[in-house]
Image 1 (spheres, rainbow over the protein chains, first blue to last red):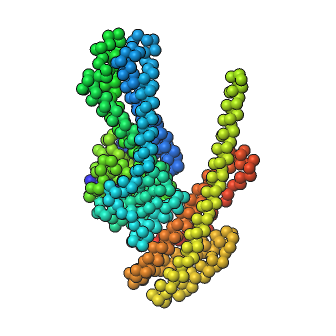
Image 2: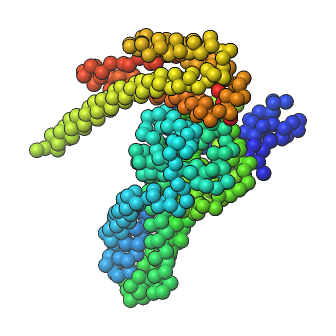
Length: 368
Length: 185
């Protein structure tokens, strides 16, 4: 399995480079190209310059974050509403405004407030813990001049202070960035990556990580994962309480709004089951968008798409998975440490887009 | 106060806040341009400091290339003496050209590449070359955002009112674009 999987032309059978859109022998439009261009991809491919790509991407992420917040708020609202119905405070079905619930509004507000408080806490603890989890150690310019210089160069290109530089001693090839603010960021690469990549390729990878820093992705990812965690926690609590007590405050006791309350319960259960799944899907979509954005930013910084393309191709061919990563940190890395990088991995639950697609977009930005 | 009165106050407040935001953005971008220019300067100085070290180390190995080494030293000295950007830009361009030639020649000396000191200096210098290029790129990007803000509606009114001027791009001289790429790997 290689990332640069050759595409066979359906017309004449000639092998074409991965990401090729037109057969170089007969000029037929390749299947791969057609498959790669559903609506959103199509939009991205039409915009060839990296600034437009970055803008489109940012608006995509913003929409996803709004959706996520709406799901969290709706969950809080439904819970408050169900409790109110269950306690007979405002019997649903009898009031003309029965879909309006004051407890529901309180529930939504509590959800949003909780997510904000949790996010602030996460922002203030984050990065050192992550570095510790992955076993990275900080290096100086004396120890690793080339890596250090490349990071300095990318920081200059981005107009940011130089991040701290870390190395993870493992033959696996990967890299990641952390830091809640650009002026307190850090970039870590694995020993395997450092040994196997040329200076240009390393520059592409460091540019990608610098892209995560410039675009405040670490903060984005943290905020999103807090929201997802909160939705999962609350949904779980609701389902458990249903299981043990047959619903909040025994619905049989209240006969006035019985039918309405029963409907409410069903709606809430369905929502509590679906909301965490949906939130997780949105989180993965955000993560994939940010990867594309970081690739585009890398090109903006290096003005040399070829470096990142050939780095990604080497990463696609590397076989060793990185054991220092776990589910909590996987979205931080340049390539998913658990792989599989192939088209099948483009399932909805992937944190990273398939490498072929990333390479195709980079080619679109001017690489060959 | 009547409703229409409140609406008028709200509109005025909105316009005032927008103007403040635009003014602050212009100040921010202008400072970014200034800072970016200083970054280029820092890197050029660093290059001037590194070159004598490199020449010192390589001259024993490259006794047949005295002429190239001389040219590098001369270009470096005239670049150091340049005081205004108008003098500095062509002088730095000539220095980049001479350095590029030296780097290309060094490829012919395997002993040189094996020398730890030389390898370190080469990495330092090529990194400095890159840093000059990247800080120039950032400078030009900053100039572009300043010029966009100064020219585009509606911030051009604020720019005109408070005398924000467009900045000039750092153009690359012909000789400098011809620098050969050196890969140490």
